[in-house]
Image (cartoon, rainbow, N blue to C red; front, side, top):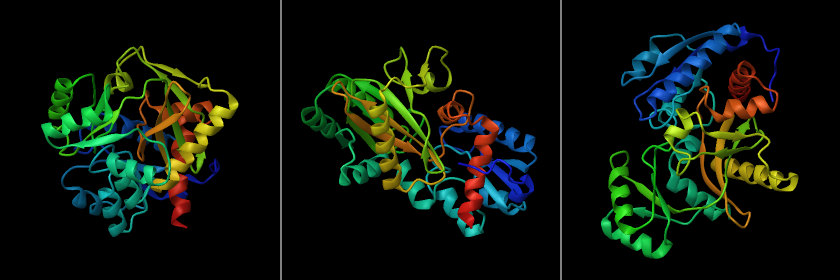
Length: 312
Protein backbone atom coordinates (compact mmCIF):
# COMPACT_ATOMS: atom_id res chain seq x y z
CA UNK A 1 0.00 0.00 0.00
CA UNK A 2 2.86 2.39 0.65
CA UNK A 3 6.61 2.95 0.64
CA UNK A 4 7.32 3.26 4.36
CA UNK A 5 10.93 4.32 3.76
CA UNK A 6 10.20 7.12 1.33
CA UNK A 7 12.39 10.13 2.11
CA UNK A 8 10.20 12.83 3.74
CA UNK A 9 12.09 15.43 1.71
CA UNK A 10 10.77 13.83 -1.49
CA UNK A 11 7.35 15.34 -0.78
CA UNK A 12 8.73 18.87 -0.88
CA UNK A 13 6.73 21.60 0.82
CA UNK A 14 3.29 20.21 1.72
CA UNK A 15 0.25 22.37 2.45
CA UNK A 16 -2.41 20.70 4.60
CA UNK A 17 -5.69 22.25 3.46
CA UNK A 18 -8.37 22.13 6.13
CA UNK A 19 -11.13 24.12 7.84
CA UNK A 20 -13.04 25.77 5.04
CA UNK A 21 -16.51 27.26 5.14
CA UNK A 22 -18.80 24.22 4.89
CA UNK A 23 -21.07 22.85 7.60
CA UNK A 24 -18.31 20.33 8.36
CA UNK A 25 -15.72 23.00 9.24
CA UNK A 26 -15.19 21.91 12.84
CA UNK A 27 -14.58 18.29 11.87
CA UNK A 28 -12.14 19.42 9.18
CA UNK A 29 -10.21 21.58 11.65
CA UNK A 30 -9.71 18.54 13.86
CA UNK A 31 -8.76 16.34 10.91
CA UNK A 32 -6.27 18.89 9.62
CA UNK A 33 -4.59 19.35 12.99
CA UNK A 34 -3.97 15.60 13.32
CA UNK A 35 -2.70 15.22 9.75
CA UNK A 36 -0.40 18.23 10.07
CA UNK A 37 1.04 17.01 13.37
CA UNK A 38 1.75 13.56 11.91
CA UNK A 39 3.44 14.92 8.78
CA UNK A 40 5.65 17.26 10.75
CA UNK A 41 6.56 14.49 13.21
CA UNK A 42 7.61 12.34 10.23
CA UNK A 43 9.96 15.05 9.04
CA UNK A 44 7.84 16.35 6.18
CA UNK A 45 8.08 20.09 5.49
CA UNK A 46 4.36 20.61 6.12
CA UNK A 47 2.28 23.64 7.09
CA UNK A 48 -1.44 24.30 7.43
CA UNK A 49 -3.83 26.54 5.51
CA UNK A 50 -7.30 27.18 6.91
CA UNK A 51 -9.02 27.60 3.57
CA UNK A 52 -11.22 30.68 3.39
CA UNK A 53 -12.96 32.74 0.74
CA UNK A 54 -9.54 34.11 -0.29
CA UNK A 55 -8.21 30.65 -1.13
CA UNK A 56 -6.57 31.78 -4.39
CA UNK A 57 -4.47 34.35 -2.54
CA UNK A 58 -3.70 31.79 0.18
CA UNK A 59 -2.38 29.28 -2.35
CA UNK A 60 -0.33 31.77 -4.35
CA UNK A 61 1.23 33.35 -1.25
CA UNK A 62 3.16 30.16 -0.46
CA UNK A 63 5.45 27.81 -2.33
CA UNK A 64 3.52 24.52 -2.40
CA UNK A 65 4.84 21.29 -3.91
CA UNK A 66 1.94 19.07 -2.79
CA UNK A 67 -1.43 19.65 -1.13
CA UNK A 68 -2.96 17.29 1.42
CA UNK A 69 -6.73 17.88 1.30
CA UNK A 70 -8.67 17.27 4.50
CA UNK A 71 -11.51 19.64 3.78
CA UNK A 72 -14.89 17.95 4.20
CA UNK A 73 -18.04 18.93 2.35
CA UNK A 74 -18.66 21.61 -0.22
CA UNK A 75 -15.77 23.85 -1.23
CA UNK A 76 -13.18 21.18 -0.51
CA UNK A 77 -14.55 17.73 -1.27
CA UNK A 78 -16.72 18.58 -4.26
CA UNK A 79 -14.17 19.14 -7.01
CA UNK A 80 -13.92 22.92 -6.80
CA UNK A 81 -10.69 22.98 -4.81
CA UNK A 82 -9.33 20.10 -6.87
CA UNK A 83 -9.94 22.12 -10.05
CA UNK A 84 -8.25 25.17 -8.58
CA UNK A 85 -5.20 23.12 -7.59
CA UNK A 86 -4.98 21.63 -11.08
CA UNK A 87 -5.09 25.11 -12.60
CA UNK A 88 -2.31 26.13 -10.23
CA UNK A 89 -0.27 23.05 -11.11
CA UNK A 90 -0.23 21.76 -7.52
CA UNK A 91 -0.53 17.96 -7.09
CA UNK A 92 -3.01 16.94 -4.38
CA UNK A 93 -4.15 13.92 -2.41
CA UNK A 94 -7.29 11.95 -3.12
CA UNK A 95 -9.73 11.90 -6.00
CA UNK A 96 -9.75 14.17 -9.02
CA UNK A 97 -12.23 16.82 -10.07
CA UNK A 98 -14.87 14.53 -11.62
CA UNK A 99 -14.87 11.86 -8.92
CA UNK A 100 -14.92 14.47 -6.15
CA UNK A 101 -17.84 16.34 -7.69
CA UNK A 102 -19.75 13.14 -8.41
CA UNK A 103 -19.28 11.62 -4.97
CA UNK A 104 -20.37 14.84 -3.26
CA UNK A 105 -23.66 14.68 -5.16
CA UNK A 106 -25.62 11.83 -3.58
CA UNK A 107 -28.25 11.87 -6.34
CA UNK A 108 -25.76 11.62 -9.21
CA UNK A 109 -23.79 8.93 -7.38
CA UNK A 110 -26.95 6.86 -6.93
CA UNK A 111 -27.83 7.32 -10.61
CA UNK A 112 -24.40 6.08 -11.70
CA UNK A 113 -24.55 3.09 -9.36
CA UNK A 114 -28.09 2.19 -10.42
CA UNK A 115 -27.11 2.38 -14.12
CA UNK A 116 -24.35 -0.15 -13.44
CA UNK A 117 -26.49 -2.54 -11.43
CA UNK A 118 -24.88 -1.60 -8.11
CA UNK A 119 -27.56 -1.81 -5.40
CA UNK A 120 -28.61 1.46 -3.77
CA UNK A 121 -31.91 2.21 -1.98
CA UNK A 122 -34.85 3.51 -4.01
CA UNK A 123 -35.19 7.25 -3.72
CA UNK A 124 -36.99 10.41 -4.81
CA UNK A 125 -36.05 14.07 -5.11
CA UNK A 126 -38.05 16.51 -2.99
CA UNK A 127 -38.74 20.04 -4.24
CA UNK A 128 -42.32 20.63 -3.06
CA UNK A 129 -44.85 19.32 -0.54
CA UNK A 130 -46.47 17.52 -3.45
CA UNK A 131 -43.17 15.69 -4.04
CA UNK A 132 -43.22 14.61 -0.41
CA UNK A 133 -46.70 13.14 -0.75
CA UNK A 134 -45.81 11.39 -4.01
CA UNK A 135 -42.65 9.93 -2.47
CA UNK A 136 -44.62 8.66 0.51
CA UNK A 137 -47.02 6.84 -1.82
CA UNK A 138 -44.27 5.45 -4.05
CA UNK A 139 -41.71 4.43 -1.43
CA UNK A 140 -43.72 3.85 1.75
CA UNK A 141 -42.41 4.35 5.28
CA UNK A 142 -40.08 4.58 7.09
CA UNK A 143 -37.86 6.83 4.97
CA UNK A 144 -34.71 8.87 5.51
CA UNK A 145 -34.32 12.45 4.29
CA UNK A 146 -30.91 13.75 3.19
CA UNK A 147 -29.49 16.98 1.80
CA UNK A 148 -27.92 15.91 -1.49
CA UNK A 149 -24.60 17.72 -1.00
CA UNK A 150 -23.80 17.43 2.72
CA UNK A 151 -21.70 14.96 4.68
CA UNK A 152 -21.35 13.87 8.31
CA UNK A 153 -25.11 13.08 8.37
CA UNK A 154 -25.84 16.82 8.59
CA UNK A 155 -29.52 17.61 7.94
CA UNK A 156 -30.60 13.95 7.86
CA UNK A 157 -33.73 12.63 9.56
CA UNK A 158 -35.72 9.40 9.70
CA UNK A 159 -39.45 9.90 9.10
CA UNK A 160 -42.49 7.67 9.64
CA UNK A 161 -45.38 9.61 8.11
CA UNK A 162 -46.15 12.39 5.62
CA UNK A 163 -46.16 15.22 8.17
CA UNK A 164 -42.72 14.18 9.45
CA UNK A 165 -41.50 13.89 5.87
CA UNK A 166 -42.61 17.43 5.00
CA UNK A 167 -41.03 18.80 8.17
CA UNK A 168 -37.73 16.98 7.55
CA UNK A 169 -37.68 18.16 3.93
CA UNK A 170 -38.16 21.76 5.04
CA UNK A 171 -35.38 21.41 7.61
CA UNK A 172 -33.00 19.82 5.09
CA UNK A 173 -33.59 22.69 2.65
CA UNK A 174 -31.73 25.00 5.06
CA UNK A 175 -28.57 23.04 4.20
CA UNK A 176 -29.11 22.31 0.52
CA UNK A 177 -31.50 23.31 -2.26
CA UNK A 178 -31.58 19.68 -3.41
CA UNK A 179 -33.06 17.15 -0.97
CA UNK A 180 -33.35 13.38 -1.35
CA UNK A 181 -35.53 10.86 0.41
CA UNK A 182 -34.57 7.17 0.47
CA UNK A 183 -36.13 3.93 1.55
CA UNK A 184 -35.07 3.08 5.07
CA UNK A 185 -32.96 -0.09 5.16
CA UNK A 186 -33.48 -1.87 8.47
CA UNK A 187 -30.36 -3.75 9.49
CA UNK A 188 -26.69 -3.39 10.37
CA UNK A 189 -24.54 -0.60 8.93
CA UNK A 190 -21.01 -1.08 7.65
CA UNK A 191 -18.32 1.25 6.43
CA UNK A 192 -15.45 0.14 4.20
CA UNK A 193 -12.35 2.28 3.68
CA UNK A 194 -10.20 2.22 0.57
CA UNK A 195 -6.48 2.99 0.64
CA UNK A 196 -4.49 3.01 -2.58
CA UNK A 197 -6.83 0.63 -4.39
CA UNK A 198 -7.20 -1.88 -1.54
CA UNK A 199 -10.16 -2.29 0.78
CA UNK A 200 -9.34 -2.15 4.48
CA UNK A 201 -11.18 -4.31 7.05
CA UNK A 202 -14.90 -3.39 7.15
CA UNK A 203 -16.26 -1.83 10.33
CA UNK A 204 -19.72 -2.64 11.71
CA UNK A 205 -21.35 0.37 13.35
CA UNK A 206 -23.72 0.33 16.29
CA UNK A 207 -25.44 3.23 18.03
CA UNK A 208 -28.40 3.69 20.37
CA UNK A 209 -29.37 6.68 18.20
CA UNK A 210 -32.00 6.28 15.50
CA UNK A 211 -29.16 6.14 12.98
CA UNK A 212 -25.44 6.90 12.75
CA UNK A 213 -25.91 10.69 12.97
CA UNK A 214 -23.46 13.58 13.53
CA UNK A 215 -23.50 13.14 17.31
CA UNK A 216 -22.85 9.40 17.05
CA UNK A 217 -19.99 10.03 14.61
CA UNK A 218 -18.09 12.74 16.46
CA UNK A 219 -19.35 13.32 19.99
CA UNK A 220 -20.99 10.28 21.58
CA UNK A 221 -19.08 7.84 23.77
CA UNK A 222 -21.58 4.99 23.31
CA UNK A 223 -21.08 4.38 19.57
CA UNK A 224 -19.91 0.82 18.91
CA UNK A 225 -17.32 -0.15 16.30
CA UNK A 226 -16.75 -3.82 15.54
CA UNK A 227 -13.57 -5.03 13.82
CA UNK A 228 -13.80 -7.84 12.75
CA UNK A 229 -17.22 -6.76 11.54
CA UNK A 230 -19.01 -10.05 12.32
CA UNK A 231 -19.64 -11.17 8.73
CA UNK A 232 -18.47 -14.61 7.64
CA UNK A 233 -15.57 -14.77 5.19
CA UNK A 234 -17.72 -15.10 2.08
CA UNK A 235 -20.04 -12.24 3.03
CA UNK A 236 -17.16 -9.94 3.97
CA UNK A 237 -15.52 -10.68 0.62
CA UNK A 238 -18.81 -9.84 -1.11
CA UNK A 239 -19.01 -6.54 0.78
CA UNK A 240 -15.44 -5.52 -0.09
CA UNK A 241 -15.95 -6.48 -3.74
CA UNK A 242 -19.13 -4.41 -3.91
CA UNK A 243 -17.36 -1.40 -2.39
CA UNK A 244 -14.53 -1.78 -4.90
CA UNK A 245 -17.11 -1.64 -7.71
CA UNK A 246 -18.74 1.40 -6.09
CA UNK A 247 -15.43 3.28 -5.91
CA UNK A 248 -14.44 2.32 -9.45
CA UNK A 249 -17.80 3.47 -10.79
CA UNK A 250 -17.33 6.94 -9.32
CA UNK A 251 -13.60 7.11 -10.08
CA UNK A 252 -12.35 7.35 -6.49
CA UNK A 253 -8.56 7.58 -6.27
CA UNK A 254 -6.06 7.34 -3.43
CA UNK A 255 -8.36 6.91 -0.49
CA UNK A 256 -12.03 7.04 0.41
CA UNK A 257 -14.79 5.41 2.41
CA UNK A 258 -18.04 3.70 1.39
CA UNK A 259 -21.11 3.48 3.64
CA UNK A 260 -23.34 0.41 3.30
CA UNK A 261 -26.48 -1.04 4.88
CA UNK A 262 -27.42 -4.72 5.06
CA UNK A 263 -31.09 -5.67 5.03
CA UNK A 264 -32.89 -8.50 6.83
CA UNK A 265 -32.25 -10.84 3.88
CA UNK A 266 -28.49 -10.25 3.98
CA UNK A 267 -28.39 -8.05 0.86
CA UNK A 268 -26.10 -4.99 0.83
CA UNK A 269 -27.23 -1.50 -0.19
CA UNK A 270 -24.78 1.30 -1.02
CA UNK A 271 -25.51 4.67 0.59
CA UNK A 272 -22.65 6.98 -0.39
CA UNK A 273 -18.91 7.31 -0.91
CA UNK A 274 -16.69 9.91 0.77
CA UNK A 275 -13.56 11.11 -1.05
CA UNK A 276 -12.00 13.10 1.83
CA UNK A 277 -13.18 11.27 4.96
CA UNK A 278 -12.61 12.40 8.52
CA UNK A 279 -9.19 11.98 10.11
CA UNK A 280 -10.10 12.74 13.73
CA UNK A 281 -9.72 10.49 16.78
CA UNK A 282 -13.33 9.32 16.16
CA UNK A 283 -12.82 8.72 12.44
CA UNK A 284 -13.31 5.44 10.64
CA UNK A 285 -10.51 5.39 8.06
CA UNK A 286 -7.77 5.56 10.73
CA UNK A 287 -9.64 2.90 12.71
CA UNK A 288 -9.80 0.55 9.71
CA UNK A 289 -6.16 1.23 8.85
CA UNK A 290 -5.10 0.37 12.40
CA UNK A 291 -6.92 -2.96 12.09
CA UNK A 292 -4.82 -3.62 9.00
CA UNK A 293 -1.61 -2.84 10.91
CA UNK A 294 -1.25 0.72 9.59
CA UNK A 295 -0.88 3.35 12.32
CA UNK A 296 -1.99 6.95 11.78
CA UNK A 297 1.45 8.34 10.76
CA UNK A 298 1.84 5.54 8.19
CA UNK A 299 -1.69 6.16 6.90
CA UNK A 300 -1.01 9.86 6.37
CA UNK A 301 2.25 9.12 4.55
CA UNK A 302 0.55 6.45 2.40
CA UNK A 303 -2.09 8.94 1.26
CA UNK A 304 0.57 11.53 0.47
CA UNK A 305 2.76 8.95 -1.27
CA UNK A 306 -0.15 8.05 -3.53
CA UNK A 307 -0.40 11.67 -4.72
CA UNK A 308 3.32 11.66 -5.57
CA UNK A 309 3.03 8.41 -7.52
CA UNK A 310 -0.11 9.61 -9.30
CA UNK A 311 1.87 12.66 -10.37
CA UNK A 312 4.30 10.26 -12.04
